[in-house]
Length: 536
Image (cartoon, rainbow, N blue to C red):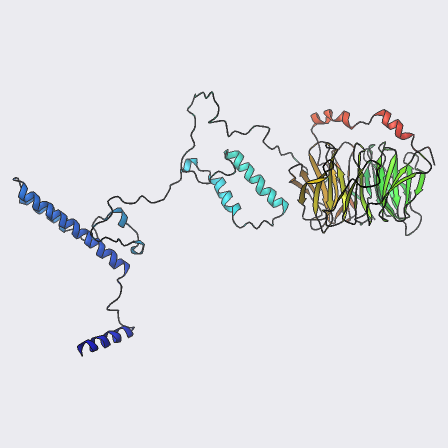
């Protein structure tokens, strides 16, 4: 019966929550106090055994010395007793109970804490890496990504560290003693960068040097309404008329105008001599004009739709039309139409001959890029990687077989093609519509014009295709690009009805003197072209 009453009392005591528990596991601080007291008692017991052993074995035993030792040991309470390093913690909760109650580890653990060397640690680079590595979703603009890349390069260059080096340094780097001569030059010069590897960032002006009003400048992605001649004359199509602006003198003259109210000019292209210009219109005609006499020389009609793109290869004028065909016109003969290319199913909006006249590249509204070998009628390559209309077509001036093409709003990519092998060597997402591309003749760079959302011109370095600079100022999509004959100034035409001049490829006076001869045209070539327009 007594056992039954004891069990009921225990159950009743557990069910009463307003009273302290009489049984259960001890708290952590109680465990620590218990272990500390045991440690002190064990130490006192070992001391007593030693004293007893000395008493029996030593003839010079002194009671006073025993009293002092015992009083010094006994007066220490367990809370103030010196504990091993393994038991030193700020809070009782961090104590790990030992499996042995009588003794502790003879050699306390040293832990895994490393103290960085402050003199060898680059705190600026470490702070930048901690901020830049965390929370990046990879959706930043090209300007933000380039800012991060340049900041990282400048910090690494200033501190002399590599890209994968640790943020915290736990020991200083070995350095050579003063006056030490290292004949092998391996330990202290292997990580040194050569001057040729260091990237030189040039200054690019971000504001237009001149802004020209261009009322009624066409807002049509498929047209080509701007071109700059070798004699520094800029041709621009405003409404139904073609105007010539002399960039040297600033004079403006109207060359021609369409008569019908619904007729308009759809493309312009200068001949290499700069004295004649080809003009395509909405009546499926191609006209040749002499700007010195402001006189029309020829009127050639062979297409069934508007002529939206033009390009010259010596005496052969190639025209792309809304009917999807490309026609070759030999301006030396009366029967000018000599060949027809049928590689597109929709409007041909981009057309350009390579500098050496070996390849003809065409881009169309059918998202296809065709490359023809000289005067052949079947394409050498047909590239279908773009997902939108291809108007931007440009040949590299220093590598004849390299072609750059840009896609429209649904594609937004600039792609580079090797026309010897027929493969895409590079592709970059510009994040906006690509309207036009122009290569620099002084730098290994190119400029592209874009639409929504920033309506900017973007300068890229090639072949890395790293973003270099955005040129802002237009308030609508930048549809047309033209480059000056000296290769230093780019003219952009946008749907905001303005023309802006950018000196984004300006060169130093030393480089200008070196490239002066390369920009001049041979007198024999000029005299040859001047004789091409004798036939009406």
